[in-house]
Length: 467
Ligand SMILES: Cc1cc2nc3c(=O)[nH]c(=O)nc-3n(C[C@H](O)[C@H](O)[C@H](O)COP(=O)(O)OP(=O)(O)OC[C@H]3O[C@@H](n4cnc5c(N)ncnc54)[C@H](O)[C@@H]3O)c2cc1C
Image (cartoon, rainbow, N blue to C red; front, side):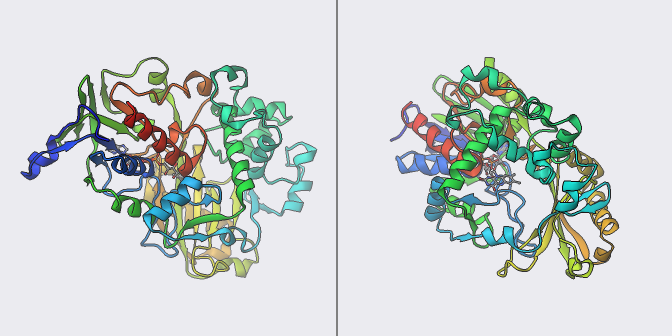
């Protein structure tokens, strides 16, 4: 099905001296949502062109193929209920492997507060433990998830973005207070390492409940976690191979002009592309820096300008000797130190062996690391680890540092809604602007993460094909 009003891709053809190609739809962004949209439109007979700002495809799916164990800096794993994800993997010809053992090998995570180690039992009895009695045995990183799961107010999580839910669209902070947590308990349970936003005041409880509902459906479908053999980046690479049209890399989109008869897209290198329609899969964090005419209005403008994108910076450390066997402690650490959260990677053929450590900083800590610069931040991580664990001295090396907030084409890890934003604009944010359509994980309505990104591409492909 070729869209009416299809026009020319003029930039690339002129630059390369080739005959100009008729393009039905330009897809902006070659992450999984953009790639899947392109594949779906081609399946229906459209001529598609994909423009990608980075020099690689995959967006937030990104594996360090040059590091031991191929650690993931982005997308980690899918659940057994990821129907779209598993289907995309099959089409892309990649093999999915069960990585559940990666999470369960080795001794459990230990808590390090103010430089001191506490076992779970010590923590449950500690006078410094600010949690209510029923939660005293929980580690800080477990508390929010448990409470949201126990007190999810949505009978049907797919109704999360109904504008009628205004009264429910409160902050995570207000919700946790209502569950009896003090400010000190909220700081420790959430703000030291917030999954979304900078702190619990910044996060919509409605979105937390949507997230929780999605996790529960995944758990009901099966408990295994699946990832792509050899690194998740092979999924978008395989998806890209299936696309017949051009995927042009290094094409940073700087302007989108939506006209009555088509869409004109301008890139930073001066090239211009035209087509009957365009699908924009760019995160709103980057779309807000692009000149779009005639321009966003109302709730959609508010969404593009203000939707949250949380900070996450990841260090990858190589380990020359398993120092945890020398001090007898777990390599897995939750700290309220500048060190962040240390996660042993069991990414080799033997999940009993640690192939390296990733160390995660979220929220304020991610900002602190970013402000130091990569080299200094990596050195600081190694120094803090060695200070807490003298057995690690000389055994760990900072190998890579990756900040999602500083990635020009993402500017944050993942979209999150602030209190009031779900009901203010979640339903309106993906509405087409004439011939310009929107997809991407931030526009998903019934699924989260990679599955949500793929869901959004199905919705937008139908939208384009039936427009
Ligand atoms: C650290 C991390 C861990 C995650 N873990 C999981 C997980 O375990 N399970 C799960 O389901 N999901 C996970 N996710 C989420 C999942 O990776 C994303 O939901 C999904 O990859 C998003 O795909 P997308 O196509 O919507 O966006 P993106 O992948 O961001 O694609 C957008 C594309 O647009 C490009 N772009 C941006 N601006 C421009 C511009 N101006 N011009 C041209 N191109 C531009 C980008 O380079 C990018 O390729 C994780 C994400 C991160 C970052």
